Length: 409
Image (cartoon, rainbow, N blue to C red; front, side, top):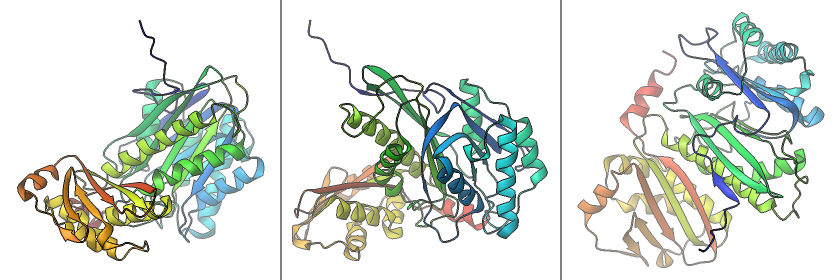
């Protein structure tokens, strides 16, 4: 009998941020929201190495500034504290004071240095936090390593999201099983170089903060930074990765024989979460994936893919099931990527609709039917090089307008 070699990177169905060794979490209702959970914590039994990326908005919220300060001090975290409902953004000196106070209360609750605490918030911009409710959360939150506690945290970070977003993979490092788990929130204001999204990744791998940051940035560029829902970037976006080294293996480095497996697992987790965010876009009915091949560089391919998936005219055509490939051409035509129209193929699903500067005959009814699927793929071939890239988004619906027209009410 022929033995099948086990893959070095494997998905863990049902895995969470608590699947890696040494993590606990919890979520509770403090009154920031009417009834749903609104306050959560991730706790590592050991101080963890950390990597983080932040929104590129000029209006970075107070929690991001406090978190950046914490991480810069020791490149180590042990607790992440998150509230939903109120973003604590554009709230001046009081907002910054409140974020520091949240960090102080949390550090006292878990008896750790203040710089071991990251603070995150998501919700309505321009409102101050009711600190008596935040204090209640810091003092009363309970953490555990159960499936229910992971779910409580995942629920506590949501805003207009309809679903919890999770992903988990195992990776073989020096023959030992390392686990990478992640969860995220995000539904609207999604156009990263980061956007209105929060992401949290845990792993029990042994790795330096410097290399963890590099692994995270590489994964981000192939995942969260390649999704768009509405072209809007928020004030609070942040992705934090923690590595507590609970699995005993040789510390990872870029020359380690299993390094590429770890990086692959990290990318898988981030891409899974990114696609779940895109599919859960406010009012969305489908996930849209754009694949570009044959560009002059991977960078060009990624830019063009995101340009197409972010076009409102493409998104509305997808909602209506209209195989109007002219919308795709229109989006491509004003991107910053150089394109030869006579060396360009466009597919909707498996159907070639445009090639070498000329429309191609196709069955509109059949393609329209394909566009009604929950996952629609648009493919572009440029025949100009080896560059390839992907981006994910969703359709633009009536419900998106309804949700955002009354977001605060």
